[in-house]
Image (cartoon, rainbow, N blue to C red; front, side, top):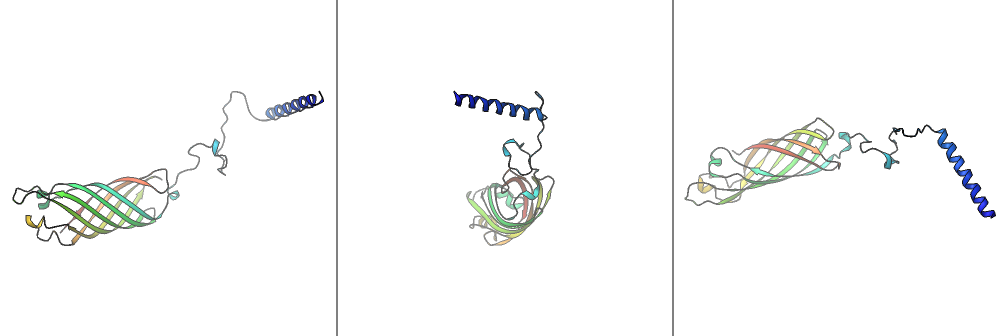
Length: 203
């Protein structure tokens, strides 16, 4: 009985103290309380999803890798005898600031001739590499428009085009041009996706 009386007394004292603390607070039954974000980020369970403002500086800079997947076609005389085809490119570079990048890009594409036989239709590949300088215009913390100038070398894999009158197509030749694109950072500070289009001159 003594233990029960002590336990009952402790419970009454604890309830009275808790009620007094609740009475001293500003809590009003039925009212919605607005809680300020905790700047220490320790109370993450109660913070809203956008407690930290997203800024461009939060995303990683320095060395980067880029992959491109799309299609490539030709204008001029080559466009009359070759179909557009799939294109893939990989670039490695360095981002000095949020608006300036230097990169080295390798690319390749696959095409089919569409000339009037003879010779018969055949497939050929175009491959090359280029050095590029990119300037960007961030218009929000996660989105940026950019332009890229490129210059390098390009060739075809065999003599398919040689038989169609492009006598130097199988040799390494100069290429230059540019690309315009849109870049969007995802939630990860290391990844982004985007769209681009471009043009090259193959003298």
